[in-house]
Structure formats: C-alpha cells, structure tokens
Image (tube, rainbow, N blue to C red; front, side):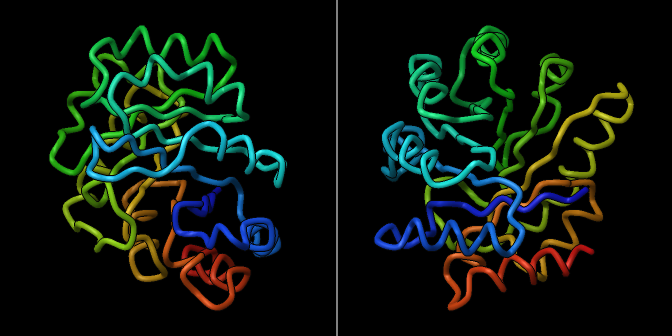
Length: 217
C-alpha cells in the first residue's frame, strides 16, 4: 500500500487546521514534519511546540524528520510532543545504533534519512533495526526543489537490500514529489510519498492529495 504524507513545511500556518483537515479529506495517511536547525541544513523551521500543535489537529501518525545535529538530545521532546515516527540523518548522528535504539525505547518507529550524495551502503549495519528509510531526493534545507533523478537508483537499491534480508521497512522519498515523479519512485520501490508544495502549494489541498494517490494507483 502506497502512503501519502503531506509535508507541513509547505502549509499555510495561518490556515493550518483547515489545511490539515483538507489533506485528511483527500486521503492523507500521515503528516510529515521537517525540523531544521540552521546547522545541519541552512534553514530554521520549527521544534516540538509545532509538533505538539499539529498533534492536537489530527489523529493521523506524525512523521518527525530531524534535520539537525545531535538529534539524540531532543528525542524525548519530540516523542512527548506527539511524534509517532522519528527519523534522524545518518550524516548527522555519530552514534547511530544507540540513537535508533533510544527512539524505539520511547515507543516510536525509528528511521534514518540519507542525503542525495550519501550511498545506501552506509545503512548496511543498521538496516535490521530500522522501520523507515527516508531517501532525500533533493538536498535538504528548503522546500520546492526539483527532484534529483539519481534518487531512483538509490530507492531501488534500498528496496533490494531490505528484500534480501526479508525486512519490513518503509521507504519514504522526500523532495520534488508530484504526479510526475511519484509513479517513478513507486516503481523503484518506495511506498511512502512525502509531498509539500505539490499538496499545500495548490488551490485545492484535498484534490491535490487525491491526484497524487491516483497517479500511483
């Protein structure tokens, strides 16, 4: 089953309740929250307080993507704010195994994200401990970027790695996802589509989610 995860980063925060309700009406499966610290990526977004606010607006799972250095310092805060999945970056976390174990101790699904230039082989040792792999299809830090085609090969490689070990791992793709790129990443092996601008940047959020679903039906 392909899941659609609209990215709150692209939403109109003055209409957040309304737009979350519209995305749900369109069939969104969970919501993605891009947490940026201005150090790991050249941008600042939001922290646990916004995650907590979104938690009050929806019962759907919340996918917290921590684009930050030393994410292990903030796991409890994001979990207590309502994050159901916590995703950290391979490039930003020195003690990856320890941090993944802690996420699971907190009762959340654990995921690792890798940037476009990071090879899938960096996940080999941690793969059996993961619930989610997040494949960045743009360089993290800003919304509205164009999809990097080389991501398709990496998605296929990650899916093959998981299948070889018979692991039940969700593969998310984040960046430049729309009705044109979505079918390509699904064909490569992705089963969670993170979409920001192509959903919240439209005049009709509900229809945008439905169009994305239809593109991969």
